[in-house]
Image (cartoon, rainbow, N blue to C red):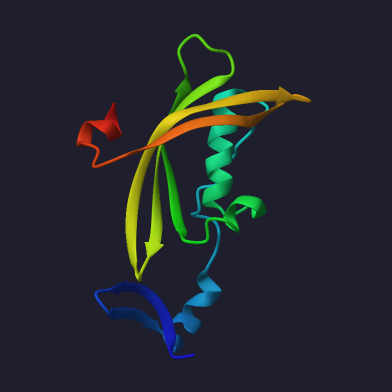
Length: 140
């Protein structure tokens, strides 16, 4: 091994030399890593957040096998949809790997959930892509 690739941009790859990386390995810990907890038993909103967290972490075989080009998923907003008890409004972005470059897509819509054995599960979605969202879309 020559090195560890850290970033690639316009055909240029930057890397950490193998000898330097090998020397740093003993100092690696998980102490500074923020861990998230998701619990789809809490609410429909928590179930939607869990769905996208698992997709981001590539912990859903049936989904990640279909979406192999996904690099990252970022949930921007989840909230109960109107006066419903089982539907959640969600906004999220996905970063894909496409022809050697990262591209971003933005989505919003609703997920209807169903409670089975004390766990909220995804039932039906109405998600649409948002083309070129303005800055306020991210902070609304």
